[in-house]
Length: 175
Image 1 (cartoon, one colour):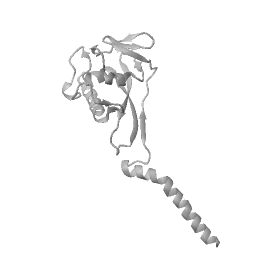
Image 2 (tube, rainbow, N blue to C red):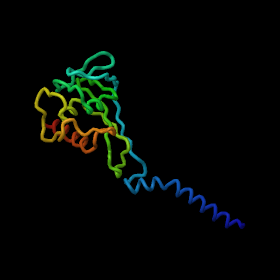
Image 3 (tube, rainbow, N blue to C red):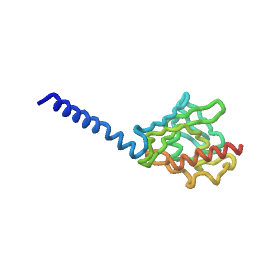
Image 4 (tube, rainbow, N blue to C red):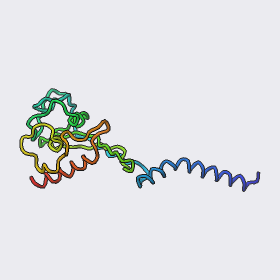
């Protein structure tokens, strides 16, 4: 074979390998408008494990029981509260309690592949109509449609989570 023929075949082979390697990224781009997936992972500051809860509050692994601001009594069973506390909780200086929740981005056109968000547990329970609140829930016309929320084995439904974030901003502007 001549030298030019070898270069042509080598160039074709390199291009073929590049096409095979790039194909998944190109397909993802055509689907989502991005070449790589997005991973949004928030963390807790000094997390404390949660063993469970009673009507009075969360039972922490270190033996403490922490009440949730604005919540008078917790339910005996709650898939949403289980999801909100299974990664531990953060106790802030102002008395608020935060947890991490997996948010389920169910649409294949969404470039977010992993979303773990930090949420105020009291606000989430008020929004989801879980437990007995100490006072009427502000902006209750914009809270979750069904008590307990839309939680599955894949996390909190993105549509309801976005509605929760909007409700939090409305609630905050009324305070």
